[in-house]
Amino acid sequence: MPRWEPDGVGRLQAAAFELFAEQGFERTTVAEIAQRAGLTQRTFFNHFADKREVLFGLGSEFQEEIVREIAACADTLPPLDVVVRALQAASDTMFEERRAAVTRRQEIIDANPELQERELSKQAALIHAIAAALHARGLDPETALLTAGAGMLVQQTAVRRWTQPAESRPLRELLSDALHSLRTVATQTTDQRVVPLET
Amino acid sequence: MPRWEPDGVGRLQAAAFELFAEQGFERTTVAEIAQRAGLTQRTFFNHFADKREVLFGLGSEFQEEIVREIAACADTLPPLDVVVRALQAASDTMFEERRAAVTRRQEIIDANPELQERELSKQAALIHAIAAALHARGLDPETALLTAGAGMLVQQTAVRRWTQPAESRPLRELLSDALHSLRTVATQTTDQRVVPLET
DNA sequence: GTCTATATGCGGATAGAC
DNA sequence: GTCTATCCGCATATAGAC
Image (cartoon, rainbow over all chains, first blue to last red; front, side):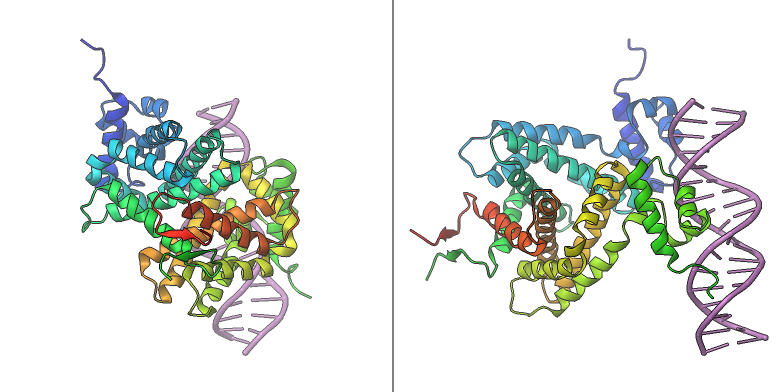
């Protein structure tokens, strides 16, 4: 018989998630979260650097998954395809079955500027991780960073649509759509060095 | 004779800039900044919402300039070109002659995670402002957001290179280069609906 | 628990504009 | 004289360091 209930981190995340949804981020204290999880405030701060961090636990696993996928991907694909395929694989594993949870998490973040700042920091960290993974495959650092940024643009566009009520398609498909949208936006410039198929 | 020395805001910004460069952001107190500017701590917080904000004053002018340029731009151009031209115009006005200052400011920010968070927030706000300006020209909101994100990707790529010691070309030119790089990155996908000029 | 620093609320002072 | 912009003083909530 275990000395404590298992998965303290998970219980703290769940408790925080509930309380933030019920009464908002600012009006929730760390003491409340710990109490609902059956733990102490001290234990909370052992697991999370600050109150915000409890909402961003999934992020690091997502990042690791993506970096793994990029490293494993075939050498012949163009870099942006490598990134989008990695995003699709990670989405299947970690997002696809949690649309409701992801949506509610997004609502909590959208309601609080502090949390938005942290979210942006995480996205920036993910961009740098992706760029590093691309650089490890031989891409020059500048192009790697640009490609990673483009990939995250695709990801954000897809997730934004995926978390809308009217949308029911899988995230994998919306990622493909978003990539195509980015290509369209980027291709429609006066600086044409490429012409349409048909003359 | 005026009751106070003029331009309290400017003096506070200059004092903060110096002190952050001399001894870092964290090791500088608001009291020190105010003292060097010949003002009090309370006055500092009358002008700036928090300590970080004193470094981000130029940003709002930059944003206004860009939004103005987008609104004034010819209707016939593709959206991403509209954004990049607006960035070029605003860069000529506000950045080109301050490369050293911009570089030092960037170094201060790069040395502090708190300031990076704020920088990312400002960039996100700029993306939304650009998207709103594009939407006002008739572009649908989703494409507007994607185009604005792509534009800021171009801006970041160009500024990153512009603030490197070895680089001496004008920012306007680096923006054109970065746009071309983004087009290249986005076009090199397996999902080809466009073919190269030459067969 | 004390100390320092950030940040906010409220009141009030004074020079110059009207 | 009134109004506004600019600035100052005091009290205080909060958070982290020690």
